[in-house]
Amino acid sequence: MWLKLQLILFSVILITVLVVHAELDSSENIELARKDTACLKPSQVCLPSGVPCCYGSHCICNVPNTRCTCFENYKESLIGK
Image (cartoon, rainbow, N blue to C red; front, side):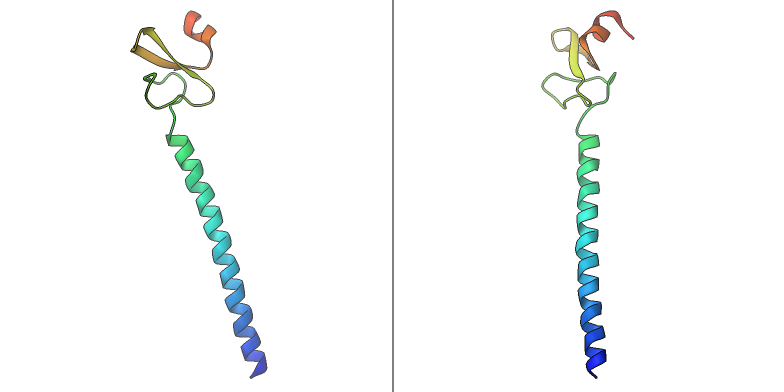
């Protein structure tokens, strides 16, 4: 009887630890997914006041607030790729 009680208690503790660990892993994945969709990749069309550009790139416009594109650096915006 004592052995069965110990096994049940051990099983409950093990399951609890695994569930908590799994929840932490999934929250990290959700956070990474949000980071990927919360910004625009270089060479995508952007708005200066809209969604920011990823990877340290900048939203640069030809004419104020028209034809804006995410560029990795300012030289690239002036001379092209």
